[in-house]
Image (cartoon, rainbow, N blue to C red; front, side, top):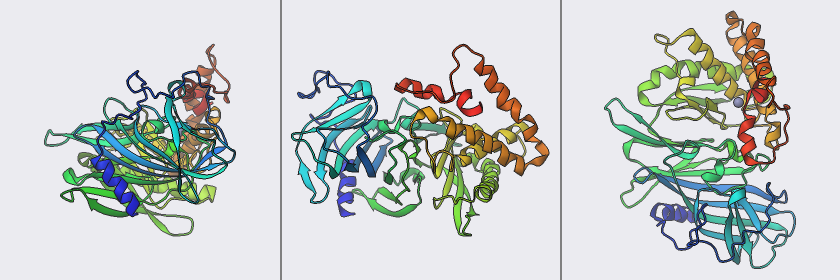
Length: 438
Ligand SMILES: [Zn+2]
């Protein structure tokens, strides 16, 4: 851990001006002398370089609206390689080192260069590297501001009319690469150890997929906190999540199949805390329903649902740290409508179904997205119908699924449920009525 403590300190103190910085945007000034535009890199990452474990330390800087990070990726090479390619976009990489695993021998790197059209970074050693275990260490930084995916800045105005900042992640389908260098395809499941470094001021606290293992303080005035999170089970990069915010949580516990209890919480900006009670109640009941129905345990040791002020979609099923647009999570017994009650119930039940459909069992590639979304849509209705039988939800199920998808399906540009995806820009088009409702 002491090694990591050193790295964390370097993150906090890191100067971003570095003559070796390679940006996602290559300019003549920072073009690596070994960069070769004509180098042919496949659209997909090779299947014989496997990431086994990531240790990621990230620190948001709310003064400059940027973040700094360091990463160690343990790799297994199934074949000899002349280079290692991984995803990275919009990150400034300030150092890259490669080590042969067993004896921690440094492998001399000839060049590190981005391949922009593939959103990849290529690490080329002087000599071919033989199959076996290796690890990569990199330092990097990126911006928080001006985006709504990756690791980004969200703000809200509190009761004192002050602007409050928070930093949150949204990685599905291919934005993890804008927060840390990674093998950003769903088939590359790995263990993730997340460490978040943040200021102790302003009541900030950190959350990630897993519970906090331990906390430490650091910095000149002990003004920084490091939260070390427990290792995740093997999972895809698009499900990794972290949050640094001043949110308050409404918490409870739920039973797993083995009768052990785990904490469950709904966290929102403090002024909305009372509106989180309904979602918390639905979460506990829907999880009980899924556990009893599937007879497969929820494998994590906590579950958080977070309402984010600025959010691109309705909700995102990050394992153990589900994020929502606030309107999809908040409900007031006094002010909200019955329609809102139905919407929040279905959205929460949908995301909880993903804890199994998508998170535990994951499609290898995005052409089978319907396996995530189709089953989550079906199960959200089954679960909410069991919680509120008076709503007779299954009577209207065809209206909200079959007929909506048919309306989409008659269009000339419709597609098959399973569609072969070649290019990155086709992936986001898969999040449509066909994947969810057909
Ligand atoms: Zn979904």
